[in-house]
Length: 122
Image: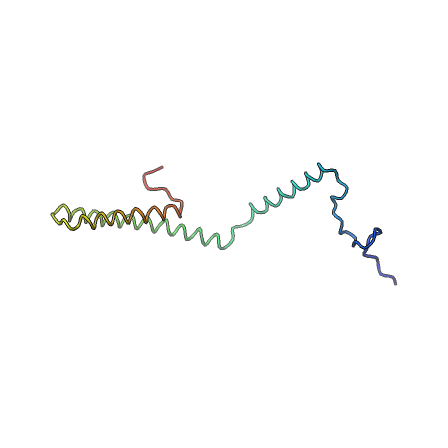
């Protein structure tokens, strides 16, 4: 029994290898390409979150919570240092200033990374 042919009548091209776009006018080709771009974009936008993305999001949430705890502790330490400075301990002023400077720098970096606004600023 003879095998069915897998080539077109035009020569060596396998059947079905020719694009369905062949012979379409330029406007139809442009609409087809535009539709394909839209479908690709829709698939990308509606794809489920990847595990790595979820881990990063969870880690950023942890960093936001951690910077809030750090801020509370830094405020408490600052208050204690201010109390000691008011009591006449002049050496504490430099320590308090160093705490403030390092806390501000650290908090700025973490807030930029986590895209978190400063408390009280909206």
